[in-house]
Length: 141
Image (spheres, helix red, strand yellow):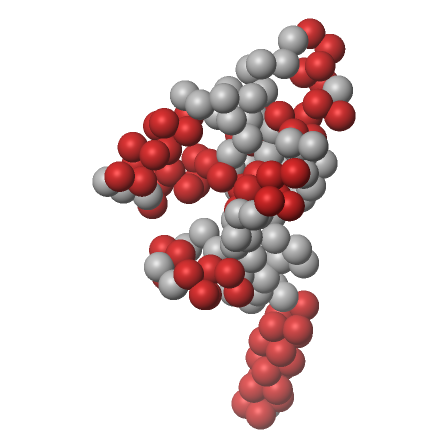
């Protein structure tokens, strides 16, 4: 009887791992999380940089839209972050207004942890984009 219980436990654990229900499993694709998560870890000069961004034209990009443009997908693609792309369950469309960190650096769900961000190579391996001309030309055509 004890052997039977152990086999069932092993089967349940294996099933959870294979199905991705045991935690620590990556999402099918990186998710947008919003600058509110970026802000929490950045300190010192980075915190000042965050506040400078918040008051910048990029930070206020959504606010520059008037009337029906606030709901126009052609406008939202550049005036919000990750428009129409998967976002974290704890993130809302409101959280992604403006041209935020992830608009230029890519969705942050996989590179957001301090352990990953402290290692630039590991951050890139986990989805952090290097900002280059092509990234900017996505909106600045």
